Amino acid sequence: MKYISTRGNSPAKSFTEILLGGLAPDGGLYLPEEYPQVTRAELDTWRKLDYAGLAFAVLSKFATDIPDSDLKAIITNTYTSKVYGNGRADSDSKEITPLRTLEPGLHILELSNGPTLAFKDMAMQLLGNLFEYTLDKQHEELNIVGATSGDTGSAAEYAMRGKRGIRVFMLSPNGKMSAFQRAQMFSLQDPNIFNIAINGMFDDAQDMVKAVSNDHAFKARYMIGTVNSINWARVSAQVVYYFKGYFSATKSNDEQVAFSVPSGNFGNICAGHIARMMGLPIGQLILATNENDVLDEFFRTGAYRPRDTRHTYETSSPSMDISKASNFERFMFDLVGRDGSKVRDFWERVDKGGSFDIRETEYWYALPRFDFASGKSTHQDRLKTIREVWEEYGVMIDTHTADGVKVGLEQRRPNLPLVCLETALPAKFAETIQEALGREPERPASMKGIEKLPQRCVEMDADVAKLKAFIQAHVPQ
Ligand SMILES: *Cc1c(COP(=O)(O)O)cnc(C)c1O
Image 1 (cartoon, rainbow, N blue to C red):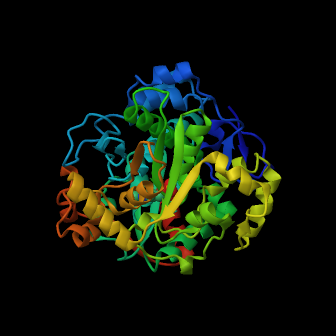
Image 2 (cartoon, protein in one colour):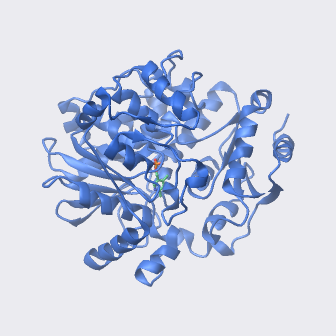
């Protein structure tokens, strides 16, 4: 299996060749040359597999240049009940991604049983093990530099902690994360994890990371890398739970389901699109946004108008607060019939801060064939949905999952079972849960009292030279 760029101007590469990198040299994103197809006979066999078995069946179609026995070992070590489902207060399931049925035809797929209580662990934990394996083979090291306002940084740190050949330098805005988020990241004592609190805002931290990445000599010398959501291995790992969720919600492969997906950077729902392109009988993919509705606007009107960061709202589903959706280009590549020059035309405008509109083009008429629906959810919708699900089913959901449930119920076609992806646990967003329900969410046992643990973090001014000096001092020459 080779990977090509959505902008059509980069040489084809293998899975491990693109694993550690980010964008393709022409600025595009990597996608398989063609999607592997899953036969009906395979679906029937896959239905019986446990999560690790299914993950191997799916990922061995993508990671064709890793020997099967190695890939199997990596996957088996990743998807174990030791890593997932160990601390949830309300569950004793041994499944990696249990399906919780609220009523017939309405389900929640639990994806947040990993170490940081959000679905990003599902892919990031695999990435940590794939990175370690590949770096070891190539006798190389990697220094990951990232900026976070919460979720992504902690998922990356918990995936990379203790890994040979990898260091993580994670920048966050000093004093801007919740006490819980700080404790989650700063209490890690692993010597390969460096937390750096920047005296500034998230955007300042993000700019420092960009400045380091754009210094090509420094980047090469210090083996600087990132783990952002455009990484292909992350997307491919997310394809697996669409299969698992489908099998759990149906009795046979003749049935169809709808998935609703709380969306930000379009990574999660892109994996659903790919699962469907491979042949999984998904009836509808329902995209839910919060007040930052760039993607909802596209699916409703055909206009893709990324906002600038000053026009990004801070909401109570903060992990969906995006101004542009970095994975959306992957879907557009398929929508335009995989013509890289078309994608180049569109993103020439986007990369300059502009927008595009497909309403007057043939692509607008091609869009319904991909069967997406979309909708938006606001703070009031979120509170109401959290309350209704709690009162009707006794199940507490987090703010992002609530956006998905709200839009999913609104948009699904009648008679199509609805699987709502759970993207985080309510314990991470206690303030909004308190506002909705007048009570505190329960914390998994592993997270009780973490605010009292000793913390490791250095403070730094928003100064790129200081960051570079810090990296130099901590990377052995
Ligand atoms: C990252 C994240 C999302 C958005 O996922 P995308 O892949 O960026 O669309 C939704 N909810 C939570 C809790 C997240 O952490």
